[in-house]
Amino acid sequence: LHRRRHSFPTRRSSDLLPRMPQRIEVYDNSHIMGTHALGAMIVATPEGFDKRSYRSFNIKNAATEPGDDYAMMREVFTRRFQLKPAEATAAEASPLPDLVLIDGGLGQLHAVEEALAAIGVDGLALVAIAKGEDRHAGREWFHLPGKEPFQLPVNDPRLHYLQRLRIETAKGLLSATRKSIKTISYEVGYDDASFFARLFRQHTELSPNQYRRQFQHKGE
Image 1 (cartoon, rainbow, N blue to C red):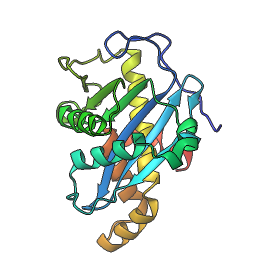
Image 2: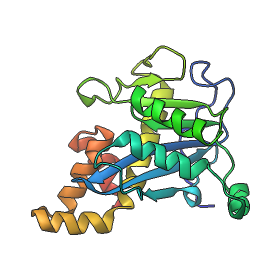
Image 3: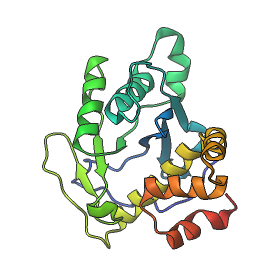
Image 4: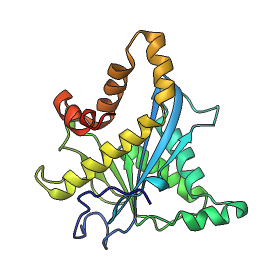
């Protein structure tokens, strides 16, 4: 597997789940000016990012309104966890996660719960991560089913690790739309690099300097 080392948490958090996760899946959705809607999933393990397990989901439901993040979440989770008999082999290659992180707030969490209930899937540990006030990184709110929202201290290593996961998810999401971004950016008059950077920062709340440190220095 193509894996990259990162700061996987060395202890569990009783707020998030009862035991240390071995597989974390992180989900986010995006669209470009109401078109090219898609969802993305990344996978993190104690060994690093499992890039071979990453998936993207082109939103296929024609009834989904542009920007309807709830409908997009329902479709993505239905397709990820509803296994048909012909997909048995794929199911073995895609084990269930110990922890599912959802980019969004209480509404996205409820949409995911509805989708999983409709296909008879339960027992997944779900956490929705909502952007903080003024989209400020470090002030995210965490939503768990049946619990009050909470925040982590800004210097908490768990928060830093979760922010790293969100950055990786945004990279996976936008990498899946490079061709569309090239087309759309040309049509609206942006150069590709600035348009891509703008979308990336929108998903990660990074400042321009943080963006350059996290992303551009890697030649992407």
